[in-house]
Amino acid sequence: MRLLNSPHFKGALFNLLARFGPRASIVPNYSSCAFFNASAPGAPVAAEVACNSRAHHRLLPPTSVSPPPPIAAATMASPPEPEPDAGGLTDYERRRAENIRRNGVILDSLRRKAAELSAIIQLSRPPTKKQQPRARPRAAPAVVRRSLRTQGLPPPPASGPAPAPPRRSTRITPSLASAILDATSPPASEAKVRDDGFDARTELVLRPSNVRRLVSADRIPSLRILPLVDRTVVAAGSNVGHVGFWVVDDDGDDAHRVFEYMPHLSSVGAIVAHAAKPHKIYSCSHGGEICLMDLERENFNITRLSEFPILSLCQAPNSPSCLYFGEETDVKLFDDRIGKVSTSWNAHASRINSIDFHPENTYMLATSSRDGTACMWDLRTMKKKGAESLVVLEHDRGLQSAYFSPSGHMVATTSLDGIVRVFSVDNFENFHTVERNNNIGTHLSTFKAIWGWNDMDLFIGNATRAIDVISVDLNDSSISTTNNACLKSEHMVSIPYRFSAHPCKVGHLACSSSSGKVFLWTRA
Image 1: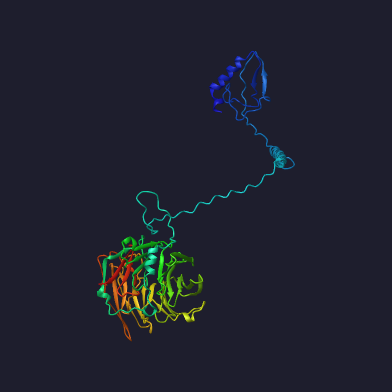
Image 2 (image 1 turned 120 degrees about the vertical axis):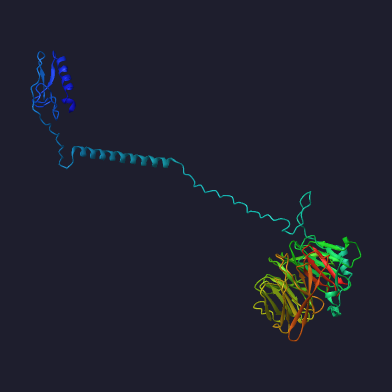
């Protein structure tokens, strides 16, 4: 509005009208729309609201142009609002609703056509079989690598191919068979040996010639001196299934004095031989096997009896073919004549480690277990189910052994911590405990105390590479012990933990260690 009221705009407008003066000019009708201010004659004034140009313009003659008369200012009327129809909708709303309805009809038609087309396509396709997901191949189980040392095998040679897998021995060397068969077996009346005044604390010595390596493995968990009167033959079982024999009294060279076989594929738990038939040697293994080494036939006869390790084995005093062995918590009787187990009963809550018969009462049996108990049994009252022991000797730790003394008046037990306890068989409440210090860390094996040739001496290994000789004194009212002897030698360079006393020769004591060697102590 300021532009219309300015003098420059007004002058430009008159110049335009003067230029087109000879022709028809369109001049606004100042009577209805005031573009000029009446207060200034001859000057145009802008009106507040513009009017309709068709209704308020007229043609001017070309010959004369005169200034427009002053007009009065007027106000422009606002446009009329649209009136609603009978339905209450305006024209805009009615057209919008019509467009929405028409678009909906079009979309419905498109949906119907798409559905019909999809059905036709599905009918025209051939039927397809549902594909089953392919089973992924299972990964092979991880193989746990074990070194030869943990398996108890010797190291491979520095060069050359790897050693072949171990094979069982099937034949016995004739020279070993003849050495044992030519020996004299003890008569039944002379099977019990007395000490004849022998003092083990002062008379036992170890000579350099009485040290031998019997097996190629490191550990010897089982040891036995065969019951021969005029010969000393030591049998040792290794932790990898080897059994070595050492004919001590043979005059040949070293190659002919030591014999090694492999009847088992796992650790040998025990070796036994009966005085009535020393040429039949039995052994058991952790593979659940019992092997008969028959020197007359020069062969091995292996019988697999269990899926569990067999750690203990003992022959019946009156029957060499009847073997009692421990299978986990059960005691079983294997009769070699029929080749099967004839009797079995549950004896302990954990693995059985030793079985021993009373030397006088052959129906009395002693067992020890890792459950910390030693039990006494009467075989005359045994039943297959519900067997009851005569007495249960409880200990704080698991037991490794329970052995009767040569006279049968006492029984000695050894626990995992090396503690020895001696009981009176006539009164089991009468006992004595021998505290020993064997704290050397992790042992390669455990200790087992054995009796010597009388009721006075117990032998057990010492952590200082020595042998403790425990002297036992049994009175009517009490048991006392003294540990005042320790056998040491510069030739025994490892800890002894398995012992065997010669059943026919007083003063012949064999012990084994974790070095694969056997040490034979003899009389000075």
